Image (tube, rainbow, N blue to C red; front, side):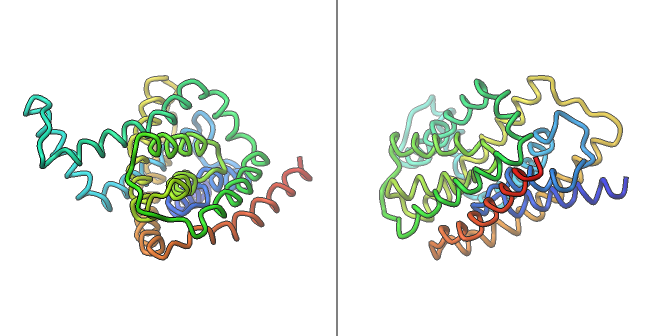
Length: 275
């Protein structure tokens, strides 16, 4: 039991630290799980555990962006109370909430229609390693990209499509969505905030999908492991998000490709050789 808990802590901390850095938390979770063996979580493979630790990092997003989230909730509540009539004070917030909803649709549709195939990818560390390389290459396109473009429905759908691709383990959600926004001419800070706001319905949707499917069945010590994972992911995620916000202001996200390209290539070579 002790070593199972250690494995859970390691995986959860990896999740928290890599969730907001553009290096693919899911990819690192799959590879770490492969190297460590059993994580102590006996559920529907690694996907259930990943969703659990994503809930921990969701808490970190809510803490960091609590003012923005509070403003959106206040505007939407006022909009509903007024009979859905927009006013000067809430039009911008309502539009932003609409962009978050629109940007969430591609990933939601991918999760519903391709769920079984996505689950299968989490059992392949070789495929995960290959997509780490792909993500590293994609991040290179963010170099020198920025702008002052406002969000439009076309840009939002582009970012949403990038988030749908990032469901694949090895594809960083933050890396793909922020890079897509930068390529569309959106400023770096605005792109980062929208990316993290998109993570809220994405994580909540994944949790809801698992609950509705009835595949989440806890046995033995599994609830303890998942609780430990959530708490550890929250703490490390909060630290990583604060650090990333500091680093994002310098616009050097492409430098994470210097890690992803060799790491993904070496792990891919290892798993191809070992089978």
